[in-house]
Image: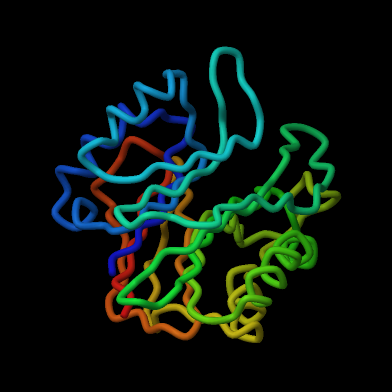
Amino acid sequence: MRIVSFNVNQTDLSHFMGDIQKDEVLATADVLLLQEIEEYHSADDVKQTLLDYGFYHFSPTRLLKGGEHGIAILSKIPIQDYEILELPAFNLFFRSRKRIGVRGFIDVAGERVQVCNVHLDSRLNITDRIRQITPFIEHIRKDGGKIILGGDFNTIPLRLYKNLLPIGLHDQGKQFHEYLLQNGLSTFHVQPKYSMRSGKIRWLLDYIYVSNMEIKQYGVRAKIEKSDHHPVWADVE
């Protein structure tokens, strides 16, 4: 089963679905975990856009004039028991956001699999980043079984003063990875060098993790350039 996680950078479906369907790797995805998706179309327009792809679930984290902004799960497999969990909020002083995690269940060869998507705050130190996702991790672990977790974890390689000013380097990604390992989640043994680029900045912020499953292949599609993030993908067995 092929999973893709993609922060589309405030773009609606019509601006990136075509590129995804033309890409030889992304076009074969069974599940797309999307962050920063904006939608300004009617529900019927959305369904028509995705008619050839499959099922669509969209959970807005905040309302915009004439549309919505949030995270979404697109799946070729019907999603059951879809739910939203609000994550702890932190004061970022500007551009503070309501953050959520979403999850649903899909049936894969007779087995029930959790599919989960998150988008964490950008300017957090590692302690608060772990605090933000912990309620979601505890929630999905209660049901156990097979879990797929992806999203933009925003593990910036910085230490911040009051969630605002960089005051040094810090490997958030390593500590966040260790936290997820301690909670029974794992990822591929080789990670891309980066999944986000802005000017000269190249950071790895986007991930796919699994529990009670195995990732056989993993990569990033750097040639998809309509966002400041590139899609990451995993073949899960």
